[in-house]
Length: 248
Image 1 (spheres, rainbow, N blue to C red):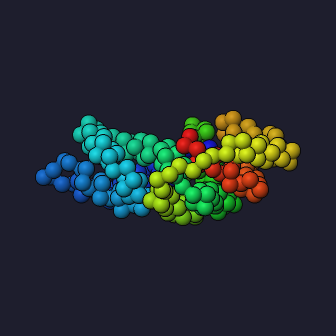
Image 2 (cartoon, rainbow, N blue to C red):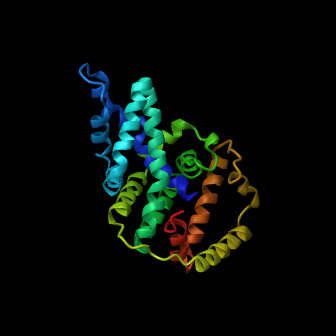
Image 3 (tube, rainbow, N blue to C red):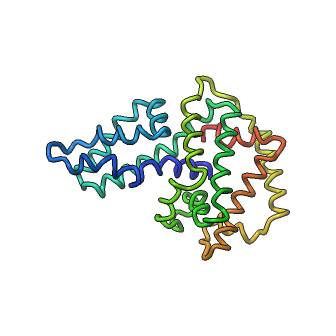
């Protein structure tokens, strides 16, 4: 679940909404087919991507080389697919790498921003809420057009900014993870959820696809209930540190 949300957040930066204005000059130019500079300039105008490459500058050139090779091989369609793949890889790594070096307050900000995207979109666009939380759990269920809408969804800009802060503000020392406290607290929260919730809704976690807005809302609520239970627990800091600050 954690990796899913982060991967979606970063890979959105590499979707056509951003790529088109960034790459168009290179695609139209007759003098050069080298799109690395245009791509880097455009992507680094996005705070989250800029913060990532500031933190890991050694990864910039290989990423741009991959994008260039894809463009040389298959033009714009191949470039779009390759840059999305790069974004997903960065997303999988971003918080996993920076979380262990982040304060409890910073991890809580990220946690709350992640929950807020679901809360803000649950009522008006439950399918988007589902896509945001379940893209990694059941990718075959996700409508790609809905996934594209996430970039403009309420709360998403805040999440991007918090992730950029998380990467730029991370220190040099790893914070310890109290696994015993975190696991005990998470289990208690899960037990309470199991007693209060509808067990039939767990089918969404198993990859069952919702068929209408009522079911999309049920799936969204299942995820939000879990986040809320963890966030409201007396040992929420230990749970969140275990989820986002353990490097996994």
